[in-house]
Amino acid sequence: MKIALGSDHGGYNLKEYIKDTLEQKGIRCMDFGTYSTRSVDYPDFALKVAKSVAGGECDQGILCCGTGIGISIAANKVPGIRAAVCGDCFSARMAREHNNANILCLGERVVGRGLAFEIVEAWLKAEFQGGRHEKRLDKISDIERAYSNF
Ligand code: RB5
Image (cartoon, rainbow, N blue to C red; front, top):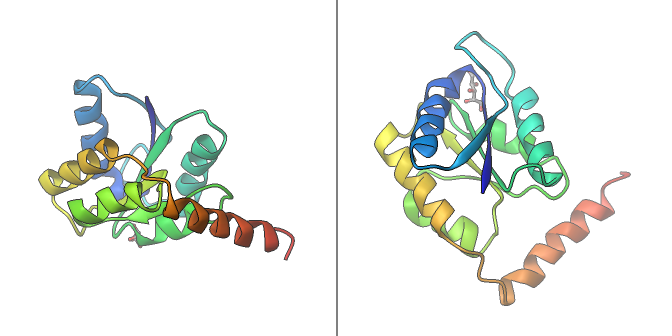
């Protein structure tokens, strides 16, 4: 499994912590930046990670910004991306089981490191349940297609 990681300055420290912790557990990561706390724009890093996941270079992605919100909005503009902002473990599990979220977004200014990593683990451990959820995801893909040349 290879995880794409990205953040803006507001999520940089959390992204670094998640990278170190995943790597200690033997999970491969590709770090798309940012690489310091210097102010940057979150859409730039959302795009890099979203392209890597949508294109199959990485299996899943984790994005961090101050709240997780801006970076998730940007990532969700890339076709095939289902990015979910989660602040608790139940939502993280559901994001995978029901929504097949392929990018998890976290807010460094919202959750502490301990909870953030439990959220990451809950999301990575969960599996998409398919079944009735499949047709709902198909409808999301239909919306993407319908508005791709809008
Ligand atoms: C940066 O100050 C902040 O706006 C950003 O990290 C994020 O929270 C946006 O949604």
